[in-house]
Amino acid sequence: MSTEIISANEPVAIVGLPAGRRRWAATAIFTALAMASLDTAIANIALPAIAADLHAGPADVIWVVNVYQIALVATLLPLAALGEVVGDRRIYLGGLLLFTLASLFCACAWSLPSLLTARVLQGLGAGGILSVNTALVRFVYPGRLQGRGFGYNALVVASAFTLGPTIASAILAIGPWSWLFAVNIPFGVVAILVGLNTLPRTPRAAHTFDFPGALMAAGCLGLFTLGIGSAAHHEGPRPISIELASAALIGWALIRRQADSPAPVLPIDLFRRPVFALSTATSICSFAVQGLAFVSLPFYFEDILGRSQVETGFFMTPWPLVVAIMAPIAGRLSDRYPAGILGGIGLALLGLGMALLAMLPANPHVVNIVWRMAICGCGFGFFQAPNMKALMSSAPSDRSGSASGMVATARLLGQTIGAALAALCFGLVGREGATVALVLGAVFAAAGCGISALRLVATSQRGA
View 1 (cartoon, rainbow, N blue to C red):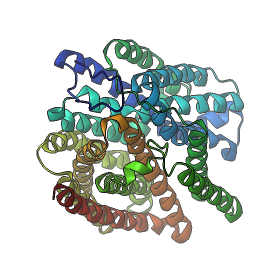
View 2: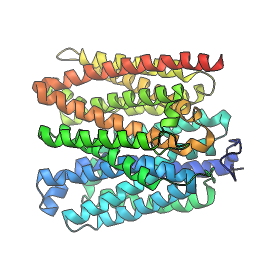
View 3: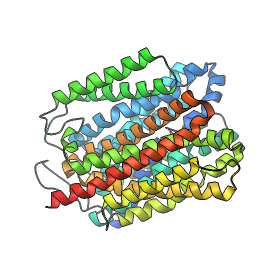
View 4: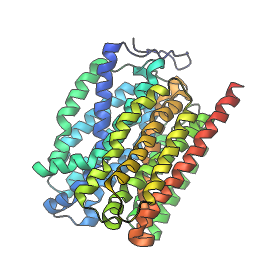
């Protein structure tokens, strides 16, 4: 049976759903998760077609990507906090409904302003989905199977992010850019109908929702994302400084405001838990590596190794393929072994793979490229599920919403930081920036590996 709760002060036993209902609930969760994750990647591929059709310049059409990303990142923590008050199920289904309707508006957009408006709404809907996604997984799967559930979750996210450009290219090969958004509609409707009948009702907190704090959190994260994006697109130093400084100022004010709150929107109470803080840091490191890799690798293969676009697409395949194999395996192992060990092994493999890619000879054989990419995929897939389980299980059940929001926030911040650093590498050293970005990715992975090991110390001290 699903977990019901009357008061946030009562203990909660997370027992999960019966097997039959669990499968349907997982189908609804992972379908919506794939849709929201894909839309962070596929729009990039369609920008030239959108610009030509809507008569927009490159500097203007890039906002089709930016406004979605900003709206998504800005609303993750506020909507996660709201889910603790009104129920994660309501936030999830409301976000999925808005995302589906906004996808229809995107497909019907007649001008750039109308498309940008629809993309903001789509980003808000995606925020509703991603903010409470892992919280729902925690309540759908019983404790003994939670690692497996988080493994499937990691598989969906990694595959959607990696395969997004390929899927977008396939759709654009047979139809206009509007199909990229219209394809979400039937999947969204099915996920809503299934979710209405199967998703569990999660704990509701006794405290009220802090609207001013939520606005401050949205402003802080939105401005930070905007500033990082401006840096990636080589904007002038003045707007970048203003955006990042404003984000820091609002963040400082938010922390001061909620220092004594039992359930702050920015979960500083959870960051006082060493395992939670360390797991969040390792997550940011891992997704920064992914951002660095998937921005730099196409340039690396084509500009430095002289390979074609078709070959580049082939070379990118082993990463998501091995992630698909390793994520469920690592999820099952996380039900038996500490995340500090599994996560450390995964990040060590990821860092090794990135370093080996950076050291490829001038004319490598196909096999030499493929097995290095496979090592990266193995490490990335091996890390995600154990880390997600450690992060979620280190938070009390009545704070699952905020922990879930932090999972998604760490992922998107890591990807954004990684992509921005890759762009910076290209700006500093030209096409050799691809090699520098791979080396930087190996450094981030090594740092994450060290942080992951610290969780073993934190866990032993807590046990003592």
